[in-house]
Amino acid sequence: MLDMELFKDPAIANRLSKQIKESVPHSLRLMEVCGTHTVAIFRSGIRSLLPEEITLLSGPGCPVCVTAIEDVDRAIKLAGQSDVILTTFGDMMRVPGSTSSLYEEKARGREIRIVYSPMDCLKIARENPEKKVIFFATGFETTSPSVAATTLESRTLGLKNFYIFSVHKLVPPAISALLSSEDVRLDGLILPGHVSTIIGIKPYEFIASQYSVPSVISGFEPIDILQAIYMLVLQIKNKEPKIGLQYKRVVCPDGNQKAAGLINTVFKPADAKWRGIGVIPQSGLKLRDEFSFMDAEKIFDADVPQSKEPSGCSCGEVLRGVKIPTDCPLFAKACTPENPIGACMVSTEGSCAAYYKYGVSFPL
Ligand code: SF4
Image 1 (cartoon, rainbow, N blue to C red):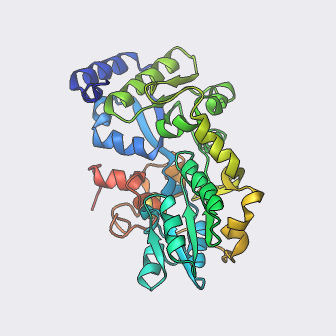
Image 2: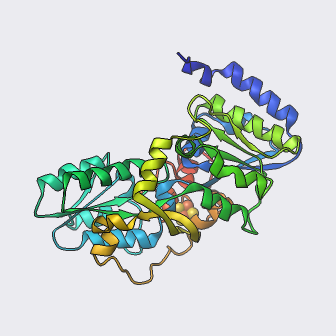
Image 3: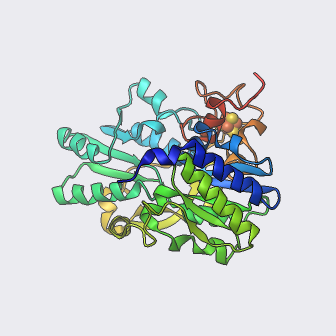
């Protein structure tokens, strides 16, 4: 059995910190793509163990943060239709839409329920046969297999009142869009451990072959992240970009074929809009045609007028690593976790919320 305490061991952390400092060849901009890494880095004080040459930037890997404002507006519109119960994960409730949030709509009397698993929606649908239960499905490759399994289970059960509003996102196309942006400059990527558990290594191969950018799939403990950074530094120093795998104890190079198979059975890739970034080709998941009878976008009117990003919010630039949260003029002034203006301040995995919570100095 693995001794997980070793992954928090200060002596190992200090040794890795020293190795990173001795090996860093020049100033480096490294992006942790995943919001869970952003929080783990702050929580464990990893920044204080890195040389000043290394700048860590947060990426577009917080599912709440990247859900387009239009999609929040559409979820609100769906929740407002007669006999609808809208269900979603709790962290979507406070994400601002153009003029409201699901939380505010619930306070106004809309039937909106938080679920901890998509399967909970099937119970709600069975207990409320006179209602139409719509699941607002957000998240990356980590979440979509459970939504796919729920979709299949609903079909098996013959439920006639359960629907999916899928705004699921895919990580590799977002990385591709980032790396091809002219204003984004990155020397290396810390790739998300849990998404990689599902998709494996192959979908990332373009990062090295097309963009010559080093990358490492990392776990979430302090030693995981420091080791991943050290592996990145060595790739950069030796000019050998490849897809490194630090998180070997969890990620198989081929991923989880069963989970990936579930995704492919139920969903097909589609263009998707990312908050503050825009449309990224083939970066989303929509239900396949054989599941149209459960597709909320096809059954209900989910059209909304032009959605509006909050004025002055820099979430788009923050999610692309062009700005850090403290560059946003609203940070810690008009925008706080109690009164979030952009989605990056809502989620616990949002970089603005992490900067706020973990004591980055900012003027109040
Ligand atoms: S501080 Fe608030 S307004 Fe500024 S980028 Fe972050 S979430 Fe958006």
